[in-house]
Amino acid sequence: MSSAQISLQNVGKKYNYEWIFRGVNHTFQQNEHTVIRGANGSGKSTLLQVILGSTMASEGELSYTATDGKEVKVEENLGLFSLATPYLELIEEFTLIEMLDFHQKMVGFREGLTIDSIIETLYLTSSKNKAIKYYSSGMKQRVKLGLALLSDTPFVLLDEPTSNLDATAIEWYKNLVEANKDGRIIMVCSNDQKDEFSFCEKELNLMDYK
Image 1 (cartoon, helix red, strand yellow):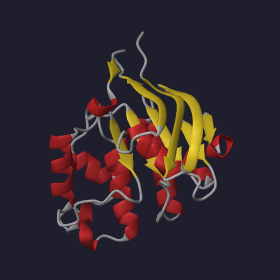
Image 2 (cartoon, rainbow, N blue to C red; image 1 turned 120 degrees about the vertical axis):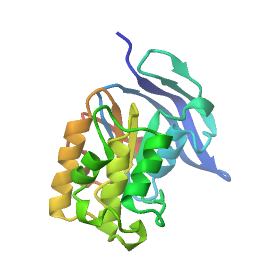
Image 3 (cartoon, rainbow, N blue to C red; image 1 turned 90 degrees about the vertical axis):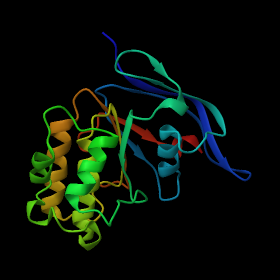
Image 4 (cartoon, helix red, strand yellow; image 1 turned 90 degrees about the horizontal axis):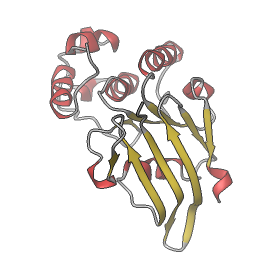
């Protein structure tokens, strides 16, 4: 049976003459979820960008295998990834309904989901016709996490996912992950907030690659 994976072979990234990380050898396997740890400034977000293909590695090789077992070129990875990061901006002029409709046409949601059911999952029914720019930071974070975890993608990248979430919303996040983790690879960058990665079986510590 075919299994999706992401393989990093001797991957390194440097800016100017300074190596951010070097010699990363790691394979992310389907149904094995990984926390990427390291001190502030250690390159966690940079590694996510390299894995996503939005930033080129300075050395080494990166390869993807889709769920059908076929290898996918880095430059052809559209549709494999969904992500929620502090630097990912929502289209704030859109209402939530418009945002979800746009995302559905561009990426698509997991089987059985509708825009109405997603709005209910986000607990944003009363704000579905409000422009996202008027949302609180916690509401925006719930939208980001919903778009990432409810998308029809095999690979999910989460950078500091509990940012701007209160205790109730953190429990919501953990339940959302639990309901949507099977059959995928989920990577979480975390500054040691255990609620962010309690479901992860594997760990990649960037301090080992300095």
